[in-house]
Image (tube, rainbow, N blue to C red; front, side, top):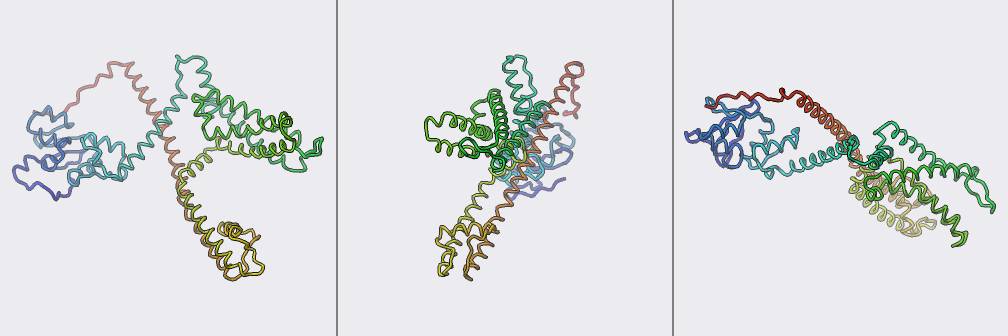
Amino acid sequence: MWTLPRTRFAYCNGSSSSDDKEIAVNIGGVRLVLCGDILNRYPDSRLAELVNCSTRSFDVISSLCDDYDPGKREFYFDRDPDSFKCIVEVYYFGEIHMKRGICPICFIKEMEFWKIDLSYLDECCKSNLTEKEEELAEIADKVKLILDDLDCDPNVSRTERWQKFLWKFMEKPESSLPARVIAVVSFLFILVSSVVMCLGTIPDLQVEDSEGNRVEHPTLDAIETACIGWFTVEYVLRLASSPNKVRFVLSFMNMIDFLAILPFYVVLVLTYLGTAMMELANVQQAVQALRIMRIARIFKLARHSSGLQTLTYALKRSFKELGLLLMYMGVGIFVFSALGYTMEQSHPETLFRSIPQSFWWAIITMTTVGYGDIYPKTTLGRCNAAISFLCGVIAIALPIHPIINNFVIYYNKQKVLETAAKHELELMELRELELAVRSSSPHRTEREPVKKKSLT
């Protein structure tokens, strides 16, 4: 039997009146004797109703508990005893603390069964409940997406059916083997395009045009054009099959895809039409500037890498830590650059010409790079450099652990959500199979009445 602390406000003193209001409850095989005076502090709760109706009607009693033994005056409940041990504390302390290891969602259902308001749950437990509800919402979203992929509504038109098929084909590699092949081909095109962009800058692989300017080799240019053609077709097909065009266009990754192909067409327009509107030198400068934007296509790899996506989300969740890092570094750079300029100003061959120029020295020193293009020459300046080096190491190391922790938490959370979504789908399949079996055998669905102990 559990031993609960005696309340400091009221307690049962063993008198006959209090004995009449004492009830014995059996929660999942664990017996507990409770005082009616304490239970009546919350008259709307199930236990208080049980105390007040125990001498009236057995029909009411049977509606409040699972079984009742009139000889022992013991009420039976097929509920979780660990959750009840936490819930019963509300009668003694006025608040409820949920123990670690108890599912918050199941605990809320237990509180609803015992008719205890959620406002009595402690704030720390409410935050845990909020996190669990968010996880369940994410699981529901994942299950909904999977069901949408598996759903084949015969009422939809052929156009909608083809649009959905094309969306799965281009956007979801796990849906089929051809979709996985398309994802691999897209990944290879991204790698080839990035390699071609790098090779095009090698002077030995460049050729001279009619005006004597060095340009990319025609072979590399042809490969670049083929890659851009693939990216364009892929983007157009994904946009055409997207169920929400506005959301698709405003998505961050889709913006990167658009910026990866935009420079090619802008350069094409400027090359053939720009000379008629502006000078050739300005057109060439604009073309060179736009070619630099081709580096955006390397970010397309994040679409095919769950690790890069996880890192991106972890960095988003670590904005506070990254802000602290920048603040620490900013303060240190300003302080040590000013000290370095002041200490080195008296040296005849000083390299610290001004405080803004000293910012560069402070940056490369605190980040432990140390190019050696600017360095202190006085004793005090070298001491200042040593201190700035140590402070830089500490400032960089402090926020690293929270960022790594956010990455691990998010990665593990995604794995748990995927597993939970798969389990939810398996349960749904089992329920559908059970319903099918019951519908095929109607005589098996009739349940026999539960035999309970006599209430008379």
